[in-house]
Amino acid sequence: MNQPSLKVYETLGPGQPPVLAVCGAKNSGKTTLAVNLVRRLVEAGLKVAAIKRDGHDFEPDVPGTDSFRLRQAGAAGVAVFSPRRFLVTVERPETTFAETAAWFSWADLIVLEGGKNSPFPKIEVVRAAISERPVATGGLVLALATDVPGDGTGPPRLALDDVQGLMELVIDRLGLRAKTARRAQDPGA
Image 1 (tube, rainbow, N blue to C red):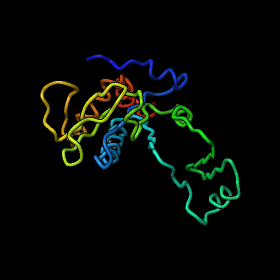
Image 2: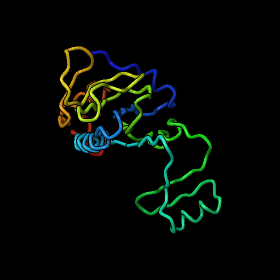
Image 3: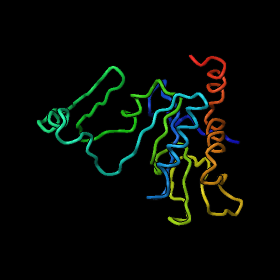
């Protein structure tokens, strides 16, 4: 099989991990597949980060919290941290995927939930009840997770629930096999 061009990752900066977009039409099951795929990749020994693409806007804080009140007061950036995690909200007119991905340089893989128009390699969810045609543009579609029969052309078609097969395909096509093998031998790697 052809390996995806790594040229797409040049826009992310040096040392950034590969990105896999899990895309499809609205309500096709992207989140369900992304969650199951992340779980399986982590079980295989990979350090996985996830980014959710929101085409609209979202509320990052719960109204009434201190961080919400600070942001509402006009703070251009608010962070909340504890000994185990942190959350950063930055108010800007434009935010790029590259800026967001830069927070995850430590990961072996970034799973982007959404991104049908992104230049990244993709697994597209095509569910007959929602849409029988792929909607992804740009980037290499590694596989379709689908319940729609194919005509033998195009990317491989795997069943919607074949998370193991999709995981193996991702590990192979994105060159992650060495990382999973190394972690199997040395879990601290």
